Length: 363
Image 1 (cartoon, rainbow, N blue to C red):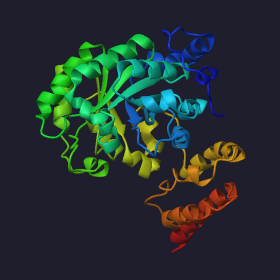
Image 2: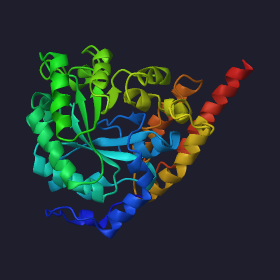
Image 3: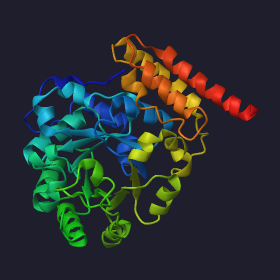
């Protein structure tokens, strides 16, 4: 089931007044709202963390916080907001990430997020893409902390759910320590209590978004220093973290860790998050079992006309490092795109992995 609240059929320009539906949603997720701070989350990633991806990730970890792809205020206000805000109820705790720089627009979109039942709304101050720069938001706002503070203040005045910020340590030739410390000081003074810091600069000229994820050097100690200077703030860290061991190491310095590409490209990483990061005593799922649990969701989506490959693209890396991983990826990549492809394709791919494991064991 995809949850699309009736309130999304129109935009309410008046001040936010909680309705019965939103009150029920807040009550239903009160434990999430009362314990907003999480130790581990999967980063918002454009073209990756759509609702199908998040539904699969929620099967792998019951406790990780999930984030939507960045949604711009313009898209929500003028575009297909019901589709952009749709999600499966099982995704909680889930946050909506917004891109924008107009306080009034961000406040309006934050109200939409709250009405839709999201547990958090996050402001993107880190994306370096040309499209974002042309819209004067994302990473370029690292240069305008006063404007970001105004945006955060407007959003917080409009909603009861937490408003958080994801930023970089600086952009271009800024002195990273001065830019980051000044940014946190200014934005926290507007009431923001939760920052996730990508521990790299963003180079707005000369590097592509992909290169900005790898080339600028990481500076974890600088983020650690933010936590020391502002111990009352929740400080999360992001960038270049690929193992749960590295997550636990970072948690000795900051409050939370956000993992991006590693969680997407090797999703089995999430199978051990609840035990390793949250000290859960529940047994981790096996990869096959996780896929089996994803099948009812896929089946429901197929019945609505969603193509199989829209969902299986998010599971391609599940068996990475194991016998049969390559044939699993190839089988799904070649067959899930075919007209009428159904769950039989997924079951065949699982069977191929099992056969490869048996063959290696017998060798």
